[in-house]
Amino acid sequence: MKIQMRKPIHSTSYRVLYGDTDAAGVVYYGNYMRYFEIGRTEFMRDLVRSYKEIEDEGLVLPVIENYARYKASASYDDLLTIQTSLAEVKNVSCRFNYRIYLSNDPDKEKSRLLVKGYTVHASVNRKGKISKLPKDVLNSLKKICFDPS
Amino acid sequence: MKIQMRKPIHSTSYRVLYGDTDAAGVVYYGNYMRYFEIGRTEFMRDLVRSYKEIEDEGLVLPVIENYARYKASASYDDLLTIQTSLAEVKNVSCRFNYRIYLSNDPDKEKSRLLVKGYTVHASVNRKGKISKLPKDVLNSLKKICFDPS
Amino acid sequence: MKIQMRKPIHSTSYRVLYGDTDAAGVVYYGNYMRYFEIGRTEFMRDLVRSYKEIEDEGLVLPVIENYARYKASASYDDLLTIQTSLAEVKNVSCRFNYRIYLSNDPDKEKSRLLVKGYTVHASVNRKGKISKLPKDVLNSLKKICFDPS
Amino acid sequence: MKIQMRKPIHSTSYRVLYGDTDAAGVVYYGNYMRYFEIGRTEFMRDLVRSYKEIEDEGLVLPVIENYARYKASASYDDLLTIQTSLAEVKNVSCRFNYRIYLSNDPDKEKSRLLVKGYTVHASVNRKGKISKLPKDVLNSLKKICFDPS
Image (cartoon, rainbow over all chains, first blue to last red; front, side, top):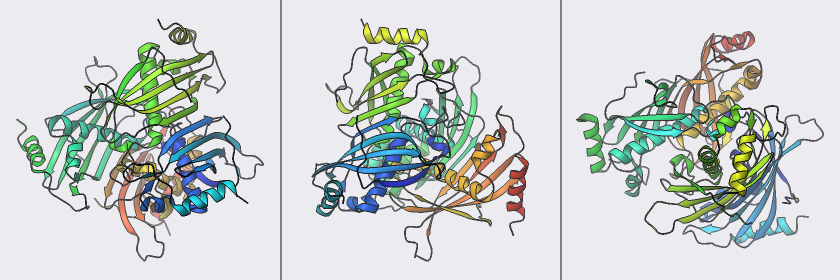
C-alpha cells in the first residue's frame, strides 16, 4: 500500500509516556491511533480551522477507516515527529496520511521512520447523517489538496 | 487510610491485556481506574440498576475523588478479581471501595491482594447541577449500605 | 479490501466501558485495537497455545500492520461480539481477521456488524531478530489455516 | 486532604485529545493519571535528572499510592497547565503533588483549578527490591524539598 506525503507536510512533536508503552518495552500499537489524532488535529488547527470549531457548527468527522504499517518501535521517553498530509478531499469525506519518525537527536541528518499510516473520515451531522463539510473548510481543504502552491 | 469492604461484596473477573501493561512489565497505574469502573458498573448492574439506565434518566455520576494503594503489581494475562463494595450513600453522592486480587490459580487458598482503593461520585443532572439520585436507586443503595441483611 | 472470515471462527464477548468511549458518545477508534487484541488472545488460548506461553519461550509477535473499517459505532455498555479468524500463516508471520458485532440482544436474528479489520504479526526473538515460530505453534496454526476440517 | 504546592512549582502544558474524553463529554478520570505522569516526568527532566536516565541505572519508581480530587471537568481541545511540586523525599520513596488548571485563555487573570492530587513512588531495583535512590538524585531531590531557595 502506497502512503505518500504531499505538500504541505505538517509536523508536530510528541514525547512517549510510560502509559503509552506495553510489557514488550515499546509503544502499544493502538496508541499510534492517538498519535495520528494529534497529527491531524494540529494540521487542521494550523492550516484550516480547529476541529473543535467544526464540531461547534454541528459536524463530526469520525474515522471510518484506518491503516498503519509498523517499521520500527518507539520506546519510553522517545521524542517523535508526527508528519501529517492531506491525501484526498471529497464533499463528505477526507483522508490524511501520516509518517511518524524518531527524532531523539535533532542533529542527526535523517530521523528513523517508525510508522506509516492513514485515516479516512466521513463528515456527519448531529443526527448521524452524512453531511457536506462546511463550505469554508471544504474550500480550504481542496485548495491544500489540489493547489498547494 | 482504612478501606474496608462491607457486605455485600461484589466480585467480577478481568484478564489483563497487553495494552494495559507498560514498559516496566506491569499494569500501568492509571489503568486500575478502568478496573474500578468495571467493578462498580457490575456492582450496580447486579445489585441496583444498570448505570446506563440511570444515565438514560438524565443523571451522571462523575468521579469527584479517587484513591488507590498499590501493594503488588499485575502482569500480562493475569486473571484478576475485582471486589467492589458500597461504602457510603448520601442524597447526592456515594462512595465505592475496591480490592483487586490476583486470582490466576483458583485453587490457591488465598489470592494475593494487589490494590485497594475507592472512588467518590457526585450525582449531577444534564445541566451539570448537583441533583438527587433517582428515588429507587437511592433506596436500593441505602438498603445495601445500612441494612445489608 | 476483502476481509473474509474462515473457519474456525472464534467468538468472545466484551462490554464497552465508559473509559472506551469519547466525547462523540461512541467508542474511540483506537480502542478497537484493544478489542482486536482480546480477540486474537482468546483465539490463541482456545485453539493453539496461550500467547503468554509463547512469550515465555522467548518470542514476541508484534503487530506490523493493522487495518480497520468502521461501519457503525458502539456506545457505552454495549455488549460486543469479537470474532477472530486466522487468515494467513508463514514461518515468521501470521495474520488475523476480525469482525466486531453489536450483540446487545442475543435473541435478534442478526447482530449488527460494526467493524471489520485485520492485524499482521511478525515473529521476533528477544534480541529483536525475525525468528521462526515455535514448531508446535506453527504446526497448529498451519493446521487451522490449511486443514480446518 | 491538604495538597499544598511548595516551590519550586514546575509547569507544563497539555492539549486534551479526543481519545482522552469519554461519553460524558469530559476527560475520563483515569486519564488524569497520565497527566500526572507528564507533570512529574518534566519536573524530573528540568530540575533533577530525566527519569529515563534513572531507569538506565537500574531503578524504577513505581506509583504505590495515588489520590485525586476533581473540582471541574476538562473538555476536548482544552489547553491544560499541569503544575507539579515535590512534597516529600525519603531514601527509598518520594511524593509529588499536582494541580491541573484550565488555561485556554492565557490572558485571564486566574485560570480555573480542575484537579488536585498526589502520587507516592517507591524506589525499586531490577529484582523488585526496595532500593535507595541514586545518590545524586537523592541529593537533588532533598535540596529541592528542604532548601528550595
